[in-house]
Image 1 (cartoon, rainbow, N blue to C red):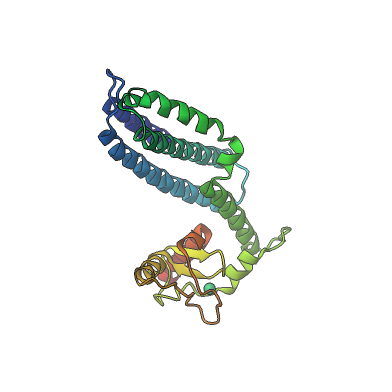
Image 2 (tube, protein in one colour; image 1 turned 135 degrees about the horizontal axis):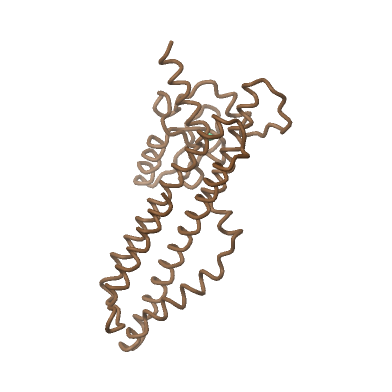
Length: 257
Ligand SMILES: [Zn+2]
């Protein structure tokens, strides 16, 4: 899958290079904006790809009950590759935007060196990206966190002793015996957790609500009774994969009976 993404990226890159004038070395500013948006779409696809890899990894952990398997290591490697690619695109978009903004204030002949200046700026930005930065990519962090939580949960279910201390997150997950969204009053499909108040909502419902309130220039209060969080923001929400799977399993089991 990663290879596929890489191909998409290189294809877009070549497209961009050609559009920017291979023979004359002169870039047309009009050709840049569509390419930048294509690259941003690429990043969304990479994000989706990373979510899929995370799902597969959780399947694996559930089936094998360990986080120490060669296949899981391979998936982690894929996550890191995607994260690096994502950073690479961000750097490229940033260098393109910075350099084209700059060229607008310069004499027309600056256009002739635009391509080189984008290239150099890109190299500069990429040089600053360390392996540690790639590991800190939010989806890589979430991936590791989901696996850790999934293992703890499984140890609980199989009744074995849990050496690790239960953290607050899991305590909240456990106390939530129902998977009902406080907004829709039905079982959640894509549960997102509010990092600030630890409450869960269904993704579509809460995003629609935030958008709605924003359009009225109002903030959105957490709908959970007794919650003091008066400003629910999109940036506070994160998809909880382990919770999502718990709901899916619950649905499957209740479907059977
Ligand atoms: Zn809340």
